[in-house]
Image 1 (cartoon, rainbow, N blue to C red):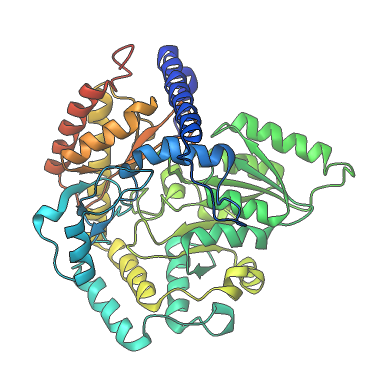
Image 2 (cartoon, rainbow, N blue to C red):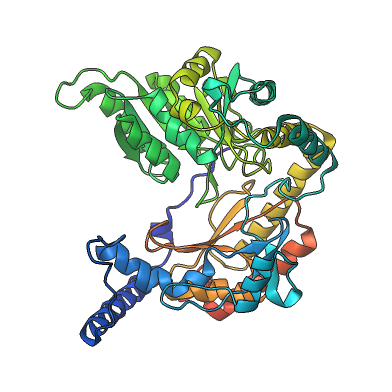
Length: 496
């Protein structure tokens, strides 16, 4: 699918919304400091125990108490049962001093290990979980059968790191399955999705190397890049012209001070950006990578299994040969109903990384039942049932995106992506919108500063193949109703 160039949100959303958003944060900050001064004057301020330093301090501590703490009921909602197409959210009280507690009867039921009654939870349509192909929902005959058989055969854990005995024949089968699915030579699996980027990147580059990273890449990429010791430069999100300028200038100037050539230049991008729902311009990145002989690292956490006609991710979506990508990374948490992740590429590269990657030495291997779940999911994806699931996912996400866009709501991202962010902007609307949707039986993720830029707080809808068209349309109707109350029609009205 050809890549469509998007107008940056900063230049697209009207100045009135931007000013009122800044004003909202300003009012909350001033009132927060005023309350702190009053508390200090009245002697209500709590101090850490004598001899102990505070866990958080300065603005970080203020932000946690006076901004995040006021709306903490919109986050970290405890659920009971599986995170399937619908979820059961346990009822909680409103925030008090930055904490949100379960009622006494819910706590008693939790401690007694009894079934929760219907008045103790609120059943919601789940538009918050990464359950793109529906494998997170129990009951699939093949997956359940294989997982239970593996549990009885291999147990729950390898209890050892992969390099020192924690890799079984089942793990090797999964690595071969991943490599075949991506049409590359080899792959290696990790026990934790976040840990793939955090430990694989330092194994690929180090001092004397250069990482050129998209400005909104995931925290795990940022962590891995910082841990590598390599020089890091960023380019504006999805801006191929700036990427090429940085690559060309870096080659000409070389390393700082010495101006020696870089040992390696590694470009790092994501297939689908998790906070934007956008598919990267992979064809453009590959063109630059080939032109200047750089290496390319592609994070497919949100695209593998969910993007492309057969679920083969951003490469299939963009019409790019997977062998043009030096390191392909993905996770098993989003489309496969499990945990962990992988990197894939040339055999000699994968073998080298296995010997020096920290997670292969210092953390246990992927749990065998999860390995079996992922292998089973790959089997289903390559079957007729898998094609139906992928088609259903695309139909659901495209339908929801179109309906919200046509209504005048500010939706970002691309068709074909299961992540559908919708802008809220003003801080007062974050909790209000989330609470109104929750009351109407819609569980969503709301995201504000500092996870996203201060002007662009948003709701992030995550659609699943398990959702029906009727559920999607009912959700759209309720979202429109809430948007009318909270004034979110930024494409139709000056103030929403």
